Amino acid sequence: MTEVLALLILLSVVGAIVAVVTPNLLYSVISVGVVGFLLAIAFLLLSAPDIAVVQIGVESICLVLLLRATLGREVDGGAQRPLVGVAFAVALVAGIGLFGLQVFYEFPEFGIPAMERFQDAAAATYLATGAETTGAPNIVTAVLLDFRGWDTLGEGTVLFCAVLGATAIMRRRARRKDDAS
Amino acid sequence: MLPESYPGMGTFLKTVIRWMKGPILLFGIYIILYGHVAPGGGFGGGVVIASAFVLMTLAYGEPYTLEFFSRDQALTLACLGLLIFVGLAWAGTWAGSGVFFDNLTAGAGGHRDHLFLTALEIGSGLFVSGALFMGFSVLMGHHEEDEE
Amino acid sequence: MIYSLCLLLILVGLYGVVSSGQTLRIVISLAIVSHGIHLLLLLIGYREGGKSPIQDAGEAASSFAAASVDPIPQALVLTSIVISLGVTALMVALCIRLYERYGTFDVTEIRRLRG
Image (cartoon, rainbow over all chains, first blue to last red; front, side, top):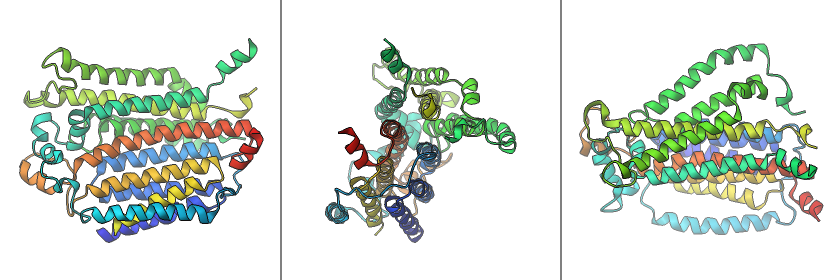
């Protein structure tokens, strides 16, 4: 199972490299769709079915949005920014990568969840008493709506602001009124 | 020429989508309502309902979808969902133990155990589907030739 | 190790953000970075041979707590995926507006045209 997961993530990395390096924007958009759908299968293998459903739906909508911005416009530009050379970008990313690898040395083995590391982890309490306390056998829903309900309220706020921002950016009528007056 | 300025996408696709949009919407509502026992919940169901409307926009074109479910209605739906969510969160403060985000009907036994959570899910699902459809339709319905 | 592959995904996205010549490609690279971070959060909470955190009807609480994966990273990633869709829509709106204003996706062209 770990091998299948590693293969999926490796294919996603290949797709991500294609998305970043190819000069044509249309190929880049398709590659990021590939990355998203492979990750949805990986989420399913990681025993997270709610997240797989949300990821597939979100990736489809995101692909349509990106394609709308791409089609009908000139897409064959350069992929690289001339001021930032390839060597500098690779060196910067490699430096951050070395720091990241040092962090991963401190992690537990893959296969031991984070709640096992701490004595009084909240997740163990949620799993043991979640169903009777909240009335929901789906512990993810119980965590989202009862134990950590504040965070869901914050998520609603952020999503609302993002959508209002997108609406305000694409609005035409207000500017036309200002031009006419 | 941007593709959405064409009126729809062909007879075969329109016929198939006409029959499919009902079951997709029903599936999204099922995911929302059964969020407490099956994988899903408000966000998954909201995303599925929004993707049903995305499908309709792609197949029929923007004007038909807007007269089916206009942008004002989508924004009203999103605000209604958020108001339900926040109102239910406040309800614990007024009608009971004074704790914000109190789960009011938990432990009541039998069928009323999960009513509060299901009501929160419905509010969350309405909000996510309205907001995502609103964001999608403002990006899709903007044509370059309408600019001054 | 799987963590290293996940870190590689995040680093590829980061490289794309740093060295992209087009505005839409920066949006795509940020989407790759957020995919990698969601994957990392889920990898932290995974239990070997574990089942999803949905309790069956007649299951005892202690055996369920010993056999299921961590539910908290899943809750965090669920909201984060939906939020990242909203923010990606916002960034794509900005890219469309920039294209209409300057006629190109190219970052150096936009800087030159801005004066």
